[in-house]
Length: 258
View 1 (cartoon, one colour):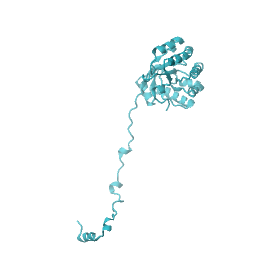
View 2 (cartoon, one colour):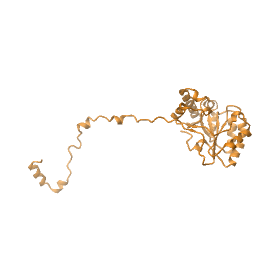
View 3 (tube, one colour):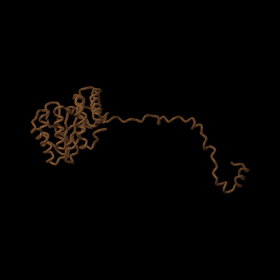
View 4 (cartoon, one colour):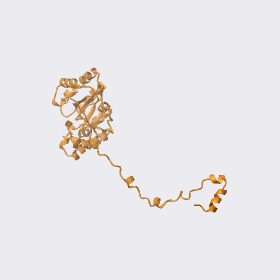
């Protein structure tokens, strides 16, 4: 309660003085609790990280549009890859090449040409092992060595990966997921690796292709003469059926590179 003389002094103030705001003497004063405030341990904690999701396995694109992706595995190869690239250029068609790191090391000029010609380059391991049959650290090595050599040669860091033989297990998918790689399989196998004739290769594709199909072919790993000989006819027949030939990333609406 105010003393009587303080009360009278207040009553004698002019209105102007009364409306003037008095400074708060405590405004700039730190309290003991502020000075001794302990840091909030929650603020200093590292943000929690959610578990890495395994890679997604994709066998085809959307079935709603007449688009198809041609893919070639196991290259680059000094004999067959240039022939495939020449035909694609002549036909103004784009494709996706799943390359082996060891082959890129041996043929860097062809890896660079794949990219320079407007095709997509993607990871197919270093030397084509059965990934589920090797240790996790060796799976990582297969992926990382191929990533590094392709980036060195082409400047591209790949987002797409096709496991050799299409084989994966939970551990392989986890290792791929750690690298944010999409696993690309296929829904039409030309079986050119079985030594089929050009006519058989074309017939296999035409009989099985549908909207969103991913076609598996090879530009290395054996005699690919039949694949090369089938390619012009295959492109022509797919286009005559109204299909647009696109790269895998275009088919899926995913970025090809990081």
